[in-house]
Length: 363
Image: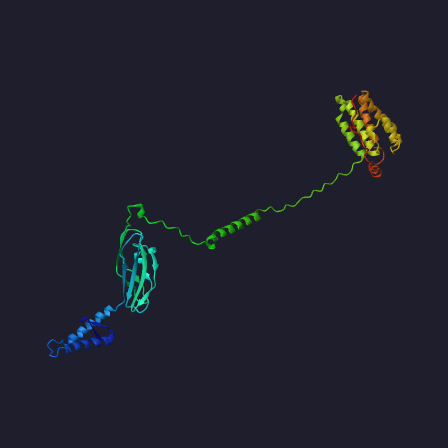
């Protein structure tokens, strides 16, 4: 198939049919010379047809071409990279920019388009930005295809000039207002997660260090067994004997304490106001109680001796002190059993006392 276009011929080869068409075209050219003088020999016609067929076949091989628009920019400007692939019926794959790693950062490719087809040609555009002034020699890129080896593009040169600064302040570009990104709850989720983690840790620490309730020890105080008035008086007499106040010149204090022990015993045991009464009054009060009658003379004699020492400053002999203590023990502990005495005879209620009871006026 031959078309005349402005004095030239364009061939569309298609296998054997195309080669046969070329030979037929050459024969048509020979028919223009009927005399055969300038006609081409058949062998030359075949050689010429084979040459034209090979040239057309080579021109139909897939190839890739790269171009920059523009090739000269200032720092901060962008340029377009156009990749054109021809001779493919299927869409090419990705463009491999790894050969540019040492020259041009891949992160400076800010926009990529999809492959677009126009006949047997495929085009794809990339937007590049440069920040440093330099003359960049960009090596060929590799375009991956569905089958076969990747197609290699041509080399490119990108010239980046430094941005010219103005001589006046008014030449500076106006400062743009800050465009704030709309707030979203996703912006605060790290804070919420951190607060939850802190709360959980605090709750765990409080639970771990919480004081466990300690068992309360209830101390049951057992009251001492009640002491009978006789036993109490005997203890006090033993303590008085151990002091031996008369040996230190304190005979008056010794007999005053002895009189107090006897009177407290009589008041507690028989329920009389012995601490506030005289010796004679005590004898009258005991007459109405169960105090042994045979011991009343001894009690009267003992109380009178204590009164003589306290009020008359009498000085008994050394042997009298021990005898008086022994007599006092006989008065507070008669021959009956102490336990029976305590159980049968209830302790009388305390008698109301006047202020200053139990104390004797000094001589």
